[in-house]
Amino acid sequence: MVNQSKHNKNQNSKPQKFSLNIQNFTRVHRQVGILFMPLLLIIVITGGWSLFRAELMEWQFPKFELAETSFENNQKETELPSSETIERKSLQELVDIARNEHGFNFSDFSIHDKERFGNFLLFFNKTDGQENLLFMDPVTGEALDSSQASFSETVYDLHLKLLLPSSFGKYLVGLMGLLLTYLIATGFLAHKNIGKNFYQLRLHKGRQIFTTDLHKLLGNWSLVFTALMSITGALLGIFMLILLVLALAAYGGDVKALFADFLGTQPQPVGGIVDYMSLDSLYQLALQQWEGYKISVIEIHNYADPAMRVTFEGELMNGFLTQQHVTFDAINGGVTFITDFTDKGAGGYMYSALPSLHFASYGGLWLKLIYWFLTLILLLVMVTGITIKSLRLKQQPFSIADRIVIALSQAVVLTASIAVLFGTTITSTANPGDYQTLGILTLIALLYTIIQRIWLAQYTWLNSVALAGYILVLTGIIALIQGKILVMTLCVSLGFLWLFSQKLSTLVASAADRKSSRRKSL
Image (cartoon, rainbow, N blue to C red):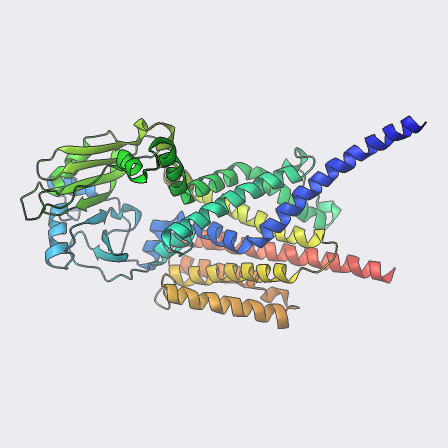
């Protein structure tokens, strides 16, 4: 009997041990998720809007009208003039205008294809940490009056490096990508009956169980997309660290040698001025390197110097985007270096494919919209996770740290919504692309959130998240009046998501309060 009793005790203890492990996974998943929620919200929200980076530029500056022209079309328009085609100046002529008329006299600079940013050319130079930008009309050669702090680039920089110093910011975003991957794994392991989580949505079991089911269901169905975004985002953020590890393993720690193998090196200037090949001729030579090659950036080194080099960066458009680089000696037109990432093995192809996968640049508008709505699902998973945490505390109040984190999260949501209003529809009122303006909007949103939580908590419809929803719906209406259908679609969909999440949270909280009151009455 004693042995039988011990046997039964051991059997009974096994499920309890397994249950304890599940509880540990759940506890860690919940606590880590809410602790880093503000940063994750910034990265995910700006990531969704960064899918429409070019469109954001056009919405803020309508004169940068998107068109189907590019560097390549310069030659076609010159060779085949048409009464319906506005002829753009040649690439070499535009460079001469930039230098002679607009004072862009740098020996090293790059020219960015307008197709991703708007109907203009962007001349870029960075000297001693200072960025020098020139926006130019490719038809007239006139300099465009444009803010360097465009809303499009600020959103992109927020997503890429949180507006922090480049290396530190990218590493932090990369670590947040790893954290999101960790949350996905622990969230998946923390739930029992994984198969049921793909279809179970118990409306009749009450609001609390419905919210938990919704969190699991959306999390499971968006698992592949969320994992793809978190992993590619992590790798993009910490890619320099990966390169350092590769350099230690294969190049004896020489990072410069690794970069030289992948991207080549540029010679030092010799001094003096020499004749060089036309940039348009070099461009045509670059197009002949690969079938389906689409050039997006031209880098010029040692301009008019005997050591002048021109690097063309772009993608292979026949199939999945693959980044390719080719460098020419501008004096004689000879190829000095080719970076063919399809020949660099798994590492080269990964480097080339990561940006395409992460920003949906290998497809058109419909693919971006699919990414957008999947991002909305991820956001809903995140906000329902906060609601579930409040339920799992068994009516215990949030800690001070949790309350601070939640207030910051609400302020992030409100700030983003106000910024979108100004950045896409009423841009003349304020430019949220400017860091100072964005900081003021953030401070206003944070102060409102604090005031609402302290003195207006009973008015749930004034909650920062609900207000963000109203602002986005209003932005969508304004966009519709202006004929911006895409802006309207994005704003209304995100606005209704915030309103739905706030309504869900309010219903769950009221249900919990009634349950608590019944317990006290008993």
